[in-house]
Length: 361
Figure 1 (cartoon, helix red, strand yellow):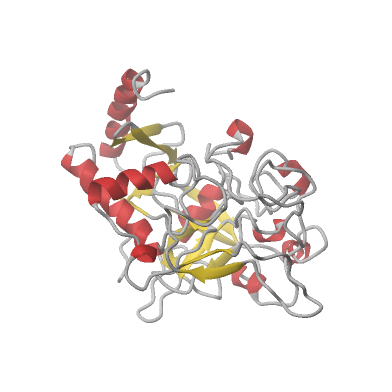
Figure 2 (cartoon, helix red, strand yellow):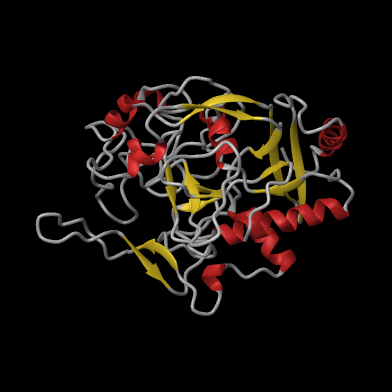
């Protein structure tokens, strides 16, 4: 639906949305959506998420599956321990609104053009982790050669995919700082336009909000938002699957989903439509691109409240990416980035609108 044809609907939704926010962020809002006008014909859709409870983390059985033949994650590392020993009951006390999709290239471009923003990768001395086009395999019997390397001169404008960038792709090669800057710009823009009630802000979701939203309202600790069966994910998410790399007759090595998802790299946001949306109506919550959240990383597990550290912060990323094996793209998967300025062609972010959860940086 184009912005012109949907203007009446947007206006009505905006009135209902503002009324809901005025009533307080604790209001159950699961049936409400919001189209935010970013200007220049670009919009961003938000989905209402009610307050509620969920089980954070994974069971030993899930970890065993993740590192087994089907999950394909590397066994013997500490990675799965970051999810905690057992699932823990968590409460999300306030309703919030989350982007239906990750922020897209077109949406981020709109921010950069209006704000004059320069991303961390584009600053003097900056770089970002990208696909290395000369890579032709791991060569594990002789030496480990990885398909990713830091590159100067690459950024969200050119992530080195080897094919033209679309505005509908999720933006990548953006840092935690860049994601927060986008949210601060959107908060200021909406506040000045009189569309943002006092006491609310656009920001990155907390880790608890993200996993709660990812699970789509389920109180069970399932591997994926649709359940435990990998096969039920066919046609639902962008993951390492049976798709040739650009210009080659090879697919990503190691464990793959046993079908073609249509893309060796990123898929457009919400490409899989209704089938790719969870119980809250959120798209691309598993696979696609890693989503950087507000919290700093705690290797012992995620927190119910936003978690920050004073020194050496490592922002948390969630959800896996297009290159990951299935075991690394579950609801419970969590990693810490190198730091607030780190960016990668597998990392993006999703916005949240809710009560402030300020960081110390």
